[in-house]
Length: 442
Image (cartoon, rainbow, N blue to C red; front, side):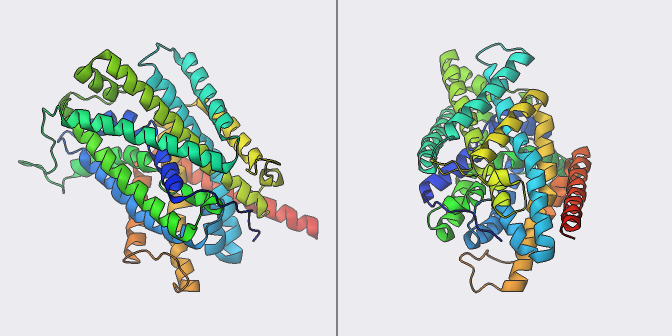
């Protein structure tokens, strides 16, 4: 397997910031009312706890793989190595196949969410929102078209905006708390009721989406300093830190706005919360900050995913043009341009709710479950003596991770069928290309 060029310039602070700004985009702000509305019992915090637990057990898998194989492309390389000579090439191709569709969808989701939330400040019709979302993708492309060390510094600035904004929301809510937040069932309610787990299933599709990104440094593995230490640390720092911020933000907002009054379509919930506390001017300020967070998340998403087709192309398992580096700035500019252009197109076509479910359905089988299985295969074949990071309580995190991802996959309903069909199409396409190549050689 060819090894992509490494350019290790990103430190632990920058790596953690890249993860965190990827995780906290527009997601937690637009999905909060949806999650609350799923729970007639008021136990909505459990959907966020479930999402954090999912990220934590899956983060152990990413940490073990990322510390051992710190190369550009993340899952691409993990699959290539874990599944051996026969299956590795197909599994890694399959990941790039779904990434070529899924990554632009992630880009589109962030841009669409940005445009929707902007309507709190400016009244925009559907086409004007599409113009804004498409324009944002192009702006982020310009920000990323530079050397990686500059990108790392920009990430720290964006990360600071994320923490300060959520911190302001949390302090404001806790200092004006009026309503108690339920954490335990009461009366006839129980954790073992179908209604509770149905609400967790629907709500967690959105909360897990809001946590995604804790592994972004693995896609940038070839650009992380001391990756055997900094990759696992940045993953756990980002998961624990963001989980705490999400829980506190929910407690703060719902302590001021009664959860019984929340509807699924209350898309300006945080802005109206600030308006109730401090007036319209403060609501405008927090809205601008939330929009900055959405842009920073899009920045991190594109940064990470642009390394995946590049890694595959360098390995000879994707179109060669994606393996080119910029002649002076030393980053995969063709891969970056293609993902942004597809994201631009998707942002003009799809709606946010469709995009979120489609993203999860496509990734669960090909990336998360396949990667958890890959850890087991690697340990069986190579042992654990050379692992820089070893997950705790193995194989418990792997088993839990697979069960949780299957639970969420089923919860996506028809999108699970869509994700499966894309995976099957990828397998057929891979064997079609391979047979043509063999026929050419003969």
